[in-house]
Structure formats: structure tokens, C-alpha cells
Length: 260
Image (cartoon, rainbow, N blue to C red; front, side, top):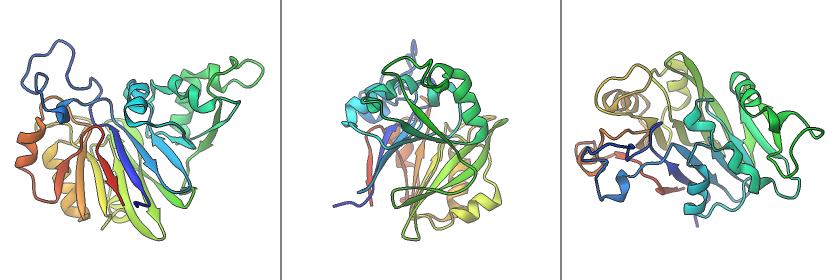
């Protein structure tokens, strides 16, 4: 039995795939791997289960993957495609249960502004609503026996946190869903990680996201055992794109599970 299971709840960019009103080949594809909801990750270990980000498709993703309980939520940044499923955390807080939430100081401030009706305390919180227990991430922290190390990177002008998952001193996975640059100190922290999960929006350059070429260059620097591309738009067809990749690089898809 796997000790750690990483499930891709979503692998798409902010508009998802298919895109509303688009008739391109990928949006019309019958390959289920070309249907991409907004990017999010679910991690389960023997002691704990958590998600990274709660995008607009969060409810449907949880139903699809049978996610019935959560011990924590970890946020990368506060763009709408990563936080707007916040309201769907309500079932995980039934019984007046607090939900630990981890985010950088900047992201936590944005969450408290957007969802002030959840963060404003017992006297004003609507009964039965999400009960956030905020934890500002300013260094490594643990969920069960897994250490999460924040990996601050730039996503255009936005600073977002990727995360490195380590258990028993083994660097299992690094998740960098939205990034344009890879600082040397972050590359050093994740060098030799078993699984690199990284932003690869499309083939053409983009001002705030890595394209496929840039993601492959990071993989060449980090030298993981396997690389998974995520946060992809409708310009990347799964089968066609994957056929041109190196053997140790694959496109992630919604529902894919990595068992460690």
C-alpha cells in the first residue's frame, strides 16, 4: 500500500479546458485527459490529508475523487482560479470543526479580505460556515509526518508559494503550479526530488507562466526522477504533446494519482 498518494484534482489554467465558446481541436477532444479543471492537488498520508488550493471546480473535484475529509488546506496564492472554491470547504467543517489553513502573509491577508465573513470571528460568522484556523507560512511546517517547505517564486508580479513535500528526510515531491522563474535557492532545495510538478501553460511564451520549453529547462536543472507538467491551457493536446516529451516527463491529467 502506498504511504503517500498525490491526486491531481485539476490540471488546467484559469479558464479550464474546454474553454467556453471555443471550437479548437483540444476543446473538442474526446480524450478525457484533455478535460482540465482548475489546478489543485490532494495529498493523503497515513496520518493526514490536505489539499493545495480550492479553485472554482473544488466541489466537483472532491465529488469525483471521493474526498470525504480534510485535515488542512494549503494555499499557493490568492488568484481567483486558486481560491474561489473556498465556500465548498463547508462540509469539511461540519460539527463546528475548525479548518487549519496555511498561506503566506500576503495570501492570508487576501483570503481574510475576500472571505471576511468567515474570518471575522464567532460573533459574526454565519452558523455552519467555514471555520478557518489561519497559519501564516514563514518557513517549513508539518502536516502529520510530512514536512512542507515553502518555495517562493514569481508568477508575473505575484509572489506565490510552491511547496516541497519531505518525509523521513526524502524529498518526495515539489509542487510549483504557477511560476515564471526558478530562483537558484529554490532549485537547490528541490534538487533530486523524486517528483517535480511544474507549470507549463503552453508552447508559446507567456509573461507570467512557464511554457513547455521553460519547464523542461527547470527539470534539466533539478534532475528529478520524474516530471509532471500541469496548469495547462487548451493549446496543449495531451497525446500529441506527451509524445514529443522526454521519457521521464509527462503531462498530468485530472484524476491522475502518484503513489509513493
